[in-house]
Image (cartoon, rainbow, N blue to C red; front, side, top):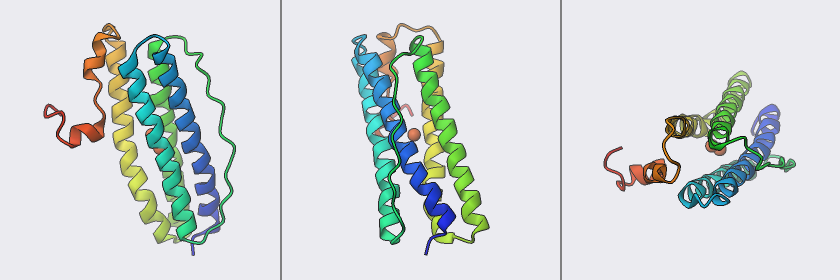
Length: 168
Ligand SMILES: [Fe+2]
Ligand SMILES: [Fe+2]
């Protein structure tokens, strides 16, 4: 049986993942409105990924016969100051999520919840990639490159590992 404290935190996290999904949808729409379609596609895909994270947690709770209570999803604004602010908000969001998983790992350790700890490990690893991906986007935009030209450098980490981009 999972620790009650961890179950509570995991339920909160489902809301955070779905809110991140909503946030990335807002970034995608922000870019789509400027006809930056590849930037938009990148964040639509990212939005889907966050939704999958939420579902992964939901499924883990159900598989463990734990209590499920779905939290509210935060409103996401398209009102970014500029392109850099938009990608920066994604990096900040990933850093916050990393902290949330670190905190949950602390809970799981203290509670002796090894099943939970094992589950969290996947997300802790995933966050390394997520932060690195968003950090690269921030550097790309901060370089001052034309945003249309920058689209040729947008590669999802999953695509890179699948061999579609041998340079990475
Ligand atoms: Fe996530
Ligand atoms: Fe993420």
